[in-house]
Image (cartoon, rainbow, N blue to C red; front, side):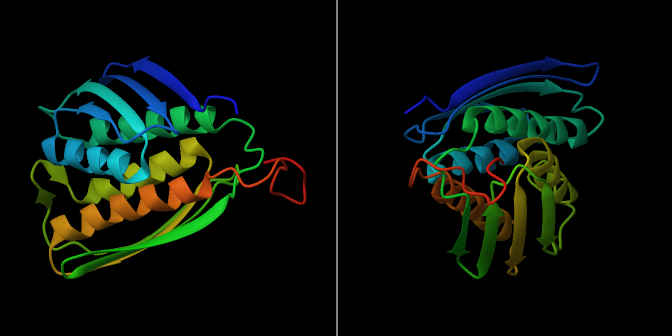
Length: 193
C-alpha cells in the first residue's frame, strides 16, 4: 500500500505554519500553535484517529486566534487531501458518536472529493482557554473545504470544553474509519473521487 503521508508549509503576513501528517500512524503528535486549548484538541484528534501529526504554527495572536486557527484548518485540510491520494479502496463514508460526560458529539463524514460542512452546536462561552468558540466551526469549515470532504456534525451538552473535545474525537474516529482500505476500487459510480 502507498504511504499515506505528506507535509505542507505556508508563510503569510499573518501566520507561518508547517504540518506533517501520516494517516496510517500510531497517534503520535507534536502540536504547537500558541493556542493551548486548540493544541489539546489537535492532539486529541491525532490520538483518537491514530494519525501521526506535527503542527508548528506561529501567528498574529496579539490580534486574536482567528488567523492561526483558520490557517491551521486550511493547511491540515491540504495535507490530509494530499495524503489520502486517489482514494482507491477506501471505505469513504463513516460516522462516530462520542460522549464526554454530559456532552455528546455525532459526526458523519464522506471523503468524497466534494467539500461541505454542516455544524449544529451552541456554546455558552466566548472562549475555552484561549480558543474562541466561534472559531471551532470556522476551523472545521476550513478543514472540510481544503480536505475536500463532507462533514456533518451535531454536538450537545452543557460544558463547552466537553462538547468541543467530544467533537474532535468523533471527527477523528469517523475519518479513521472512512479511510480504512476495504477493496481496490474507487468507491463512486463516477469512477473517480
